[in-house]
Length: 211
Picture 1: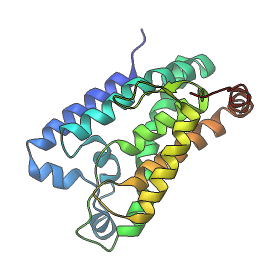
Picture 2: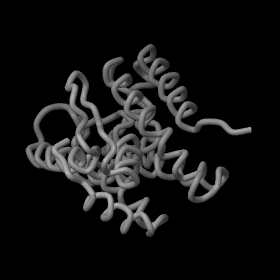
Picture 3: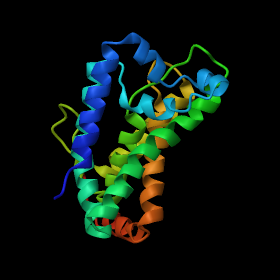
Picture 4: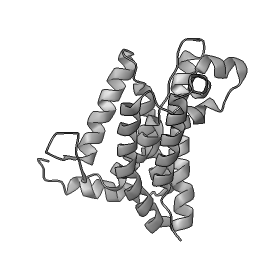
């Protein structure tokens, strides 16, 4: 019997976020606070912060992205490594994406008691960019824009924007987590499935554009 890890992760995210919405103490204890992690060794925050969200809009956006990309990444890994190994690889991609994407934020803000971060964006970005590596020409649609953007073009623009915003450091969005989660997703797939690199290059070469 097969089951979808993507659906399970979505359900866990929704349940954890709703629970945190209704309990401010849980929200404070589960979110990423680099200062508290550094001073009190509360390392669980690296994981729990990746399953709670600031509000419904934040949760829905992340879960929609995970739903559309997660399934195709799961199925691709299953075809390459078999269903059992694929689930281990997929879960590692998602969970390590959450942790690793938060490490730069942790080191940057470990002496700032007022800094907090939360959301599944690091793990979701890892999954999204794993999908882009596998299928760089697959169109990605952004909200109400009717034209699909090839994944590799979207990926380049996303990385450039995330890098710029992370350097600028303005606003409340942790763009650093988006950036590092995305790069981890690429590295994860390349290391575990080296044959994806020539396949990726061949697909890019076949692109005739525009969009």
